[in-house]
Image (tube, rainbow over all chains, first blue to last red; front, side):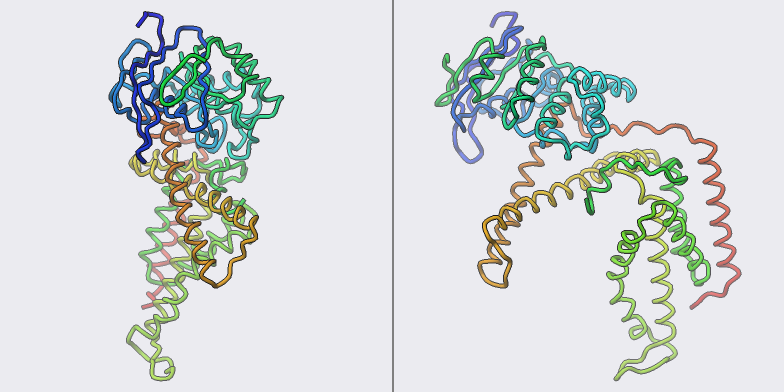
Length: 219
Length: 258
């Protein structure tokens, strides 16, 4: 493990409650400034790997170290969750507050910001993503592309050091996709990006790995 | 939009009442309802119903929806109200077949109907116009336990989620030419729909919890505190105390119905 590794995964095993084993000894690392593409077939366990990294599901065995600290228990994961941002596959899962502003403020508030500060951060994040004027919109009335960008805003509002993107371009039209590419390229955070869209990955990713048969190989 | 979704939409109402602090409105509703429930003469109750109806009319001018809400509640207690005269013993008004209707029962039914309508109207008038965030803040402001408030907020959120999930599945069924009939196939399909609804909602709720955890959620919502009470809040509170006193005065002056 080199000092610059933001994420180190060693020999990770994960089985679904249904008994299907998807991760069978995964080794993975993410370095500062990297945008790592994670590719693989549907159902290969890519999303599960990200969920393991966030501590949302419990891995059977294996080691996960995030930002230099080893994560095994819920409280250990809790300590790093604010510093790692996960963009969900389905933005509807991520947006649960009535208005866009409340939703973007949710993360900063949980991190202990005052309501005024959280509002400032939220407004700034929305403005950075070109979403000015969205703050009073109702989250479930947004279009698919708008939902994705707002979901990204909710993650970025916590100023994470690592971004995990789960099929970020799924169901987006060409315009929104271009906008997302421009945003991602401008961000300084290291990222793990799951996608089936090779054109998108070519423009964003700096390195890529493939998840197949439960293990990681070079792509 | 119907039903539960309304409460999620930020209120843009600009009526006088909507500018009153939510804590004041919640406490006012509580005070009025508790007072009304303890009354035993009809005059103060009728006055409260009238005043609450007028305030409701001012609070938001969609009469038809409000009326529907009140009638829905009345629908629930209608059976009980019509049974009461026959089940309470007392002076007989008339006899229907072998059942005697009593004055005492009738009066009790009248009182219950008035109290129920007064309570619903007061709630619609004072609390009905609040959106979810404001309501959450208000409840927290009057020291309702944070866990209860969170539970309440999630109930609002999930009822809506269930409804939308149901509508989506229902559309998918209709797209494959499903028409509900009274046959085995229809009932089984509805069974599947209900089962799928439960499973999907459970899965989705889990994913939402994950999303919240990812954003450092530790078990309670931050609604933020409310601003200090303004002069108009104090004015509202004084008016309410005077009104409650007037109602109590009326109650003392008027003979009890039973």
